[in-house]
Image 1: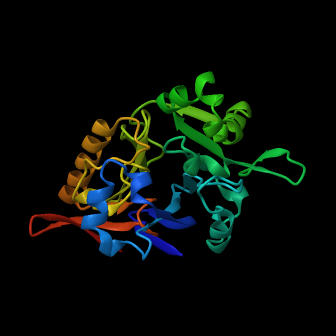
Image 2: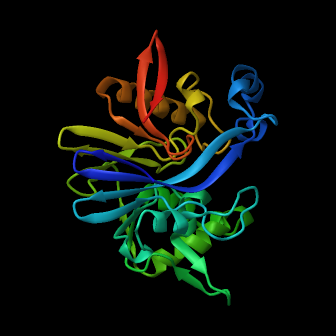
Length: 277
């Protein structure tokens, strides 16, 4: 287990799945330069190690889960998610999760919201939790035009059931979650994408969701993956997040950077550098 403490908040990185990123598929507009500059970061096949990591925050007496990974269903191009195993290793039962924040509604961030039993019946995996989702994000994705697309089956499987069960609170903008945690709007990857700011007892951290997918974006914030709905806006969001992290020394917590994705961004010899914890 990788656990750090920020003020009065304890943060544990929960690995749902390691993944390998194929630059031509992930960042097609910049793949050739990506491979040329960062070949040393790749394996023998040219694939870049990444992760799908969720984060357990113990804050103000509650267990708060930031994103729920891939889930247990088969997903094309992804390995099976293992979040339940990670929770067990952390000594936490799904019934002990009080609050879940989906930073956005992509498949690898909502997957364990629900599970299917052996008979194909769908159940909410966290029996006592409430969900908090940004209204802008919900309104964008949960339209019939998107729900009917085969590639968006996860919206029907993983998002609609928790809404139908009355377990979702829709919020807008920079809202506090508790005395230590606050939503930070970080649009670009998706319209309602948010990060989670942690401000506690004089210490700071930020759980960035998918505002950045890989440390190479420290050098090239304009390298937006194919999944960004607004590449120009996402680049501006990344640049600001990087510079803010350098300016105040906040701990950087990134779910797709190689697990556990926790460290600090500093400037050394004029270059942004990630220093892992």
